[in-house]
Image 1: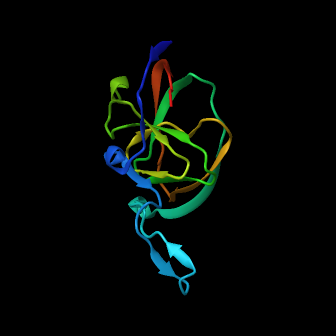
Image 2: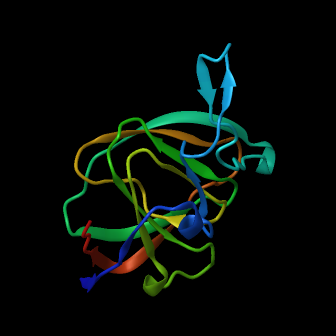
Length: 166
């Protein structure tokens, strides 16, 4: 088993831009419903149209993994984006690599989401399945339904241990 350390960075829109969108409510909003509601509008570029895809809405419940986290695989969605937004204010880890045919361990990037941020992975971006940190966490997931294979997995030849300090 290889032991590597991936520096965990705070999740910001600028740092995450090569991989997708950070979904948050820190920006402007529209007042709607006679001023009784704030609408945080168009927060991510949802991309599901390939092969006549349709949007689907899911809830995923993620259980924390033992630490150090053993990274065995990454996945990507070649036909669509995939968005995750936590339903509870619990931090979680985001582990990504750029969209490419080959994944280098040195190209892994880890981000700490503060529990009030979601992510929308661009089409083809490699990412680890959900990484809840301290407690089971539920997420709303906007995904693609329809024909075609929309999940590829890349299995590392051996497990990689990632140390997390936050």
